[in-house]
Image 1: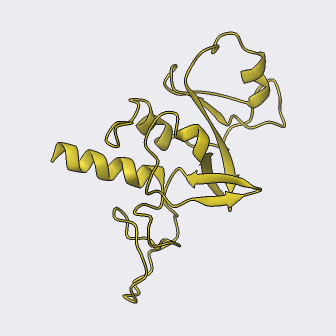
Image 2: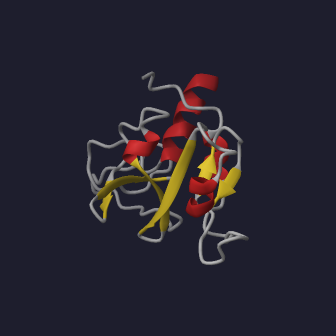
Length: 145
């Protein structure tokens, strides 16, 4: 897989606000599945399973991990090269964060590894990015500047 290629809908997915809207049919469920083929259609997991409308479409299901929106590394790896993005293990599932942490950046200059895009602290030094959004932004910057 080309490390510089991302599906055209991934940037829209990154900008989507998940966990803001509950399903109209299933009031206890949030709309957590992003349909890439429909470019922005959000549905809950029950509606997704029951739907024939989205059969065969590209999609990503998001999760909440440490109060942040995340995606299973197995799911995102189907659509793009997710190497060099900090991995986290949540309930035995390996995930990557969709967006950078909203907390302020730490200004320590102690050799702590930092995200190449947003300069936020990374847990392990062999990673280069803290989130999918940071990797996508960095790749687009390199390609189009």
